[in-house]
Amino acid sequence: MSHSLRAVVGVLTCMPATLGAQGNAQCAARNIGPFGGAQAQNICNAAVDGAAVFVPVAGILVTSGNPFLGATGGLGGLPHLGITLRVNATQVVIPDLNYNGIGNTVAAGQTVTAPAPLIEGALGVFGGLHGGSLALDVLGSAQLLPTNLIDNVHIDVNARRIGSIALGLGFGGRLTLLAEGTLLPALTVSAMRRTLPRVGVGSIVAGDRYSFATDLTSTEYRATIGKRFGPFALAAGAGWTGYAADAQIFFLNPVTTEPEPPVFVTVNDSRAVGFVDGGLALGRVYLVAEAGLQRGKDLGLVTTFTGNDAKDQRLFGSFGLRFGF
Image (cartoon, rainbow, N blue to C red; front, side, top):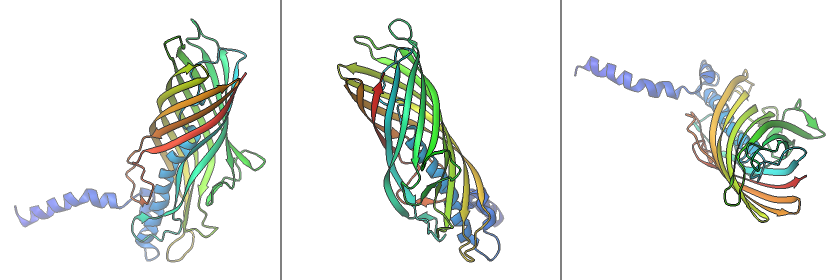
């Protein structure tokens, strides 16, 4: 092979790695000129990648597994109503917001088990046929977002609120394909759409070197199988959730310490989930718990976040009190 041909092959071989190293397209222009250079680009990449990692984490806190915790079948039509006071939880790693852009690894700044309280309801619309098959329930939820629950996490000041609690809303429906019988379990399918106001991580005004803030819209589909055994109920399910978010990125130039022009990105992601519910009936009150797993996904990030790899599967859990009427 001639020296010229070797040179051409070498260039072609290196091109994918070179292009991949450039990072997010929104940040490429930051590596121009004497101010900031590669450090400014790396901080920009960390903020953009941080938003991408944050979306499915916030999403699983909102959606969790079963859209009506512990339910094993239809409610039985009008006027039957169920209301659940629920808390979802998963581990959240807040990245180091003082990352200076040297290297592509961002250390973990704070690790917490974040609770996400919500109120969810179900209203029987159609009681179904043949003992409850094809029963239809309308589902709704109100996500409660305390404004000062986690350090370095804040809620948009323009979010809908009740007092100091910001609200995210959701609505959907559940169809009982097969009613529960003496030996057979109930089989249900459901769909929900939820929205979350803009949630921010970090603040350059408060002294952080970068921050990101995203709203969130989720669309979830679930299939659940469940059976009651006296006062006990067991259910298991699986499904898919699609996430869409518009993110705002702010960061300081590492040389001038002045704010750079903001970056705006759209994040789209989707994850598979599986879950198991268990409940105990005490009259018309049910104690219900859920454990689940959100599947990981390779997002092709430029930045490595210590303790928060998007490819890892994520454990989540829920606990609630359900009231039936």
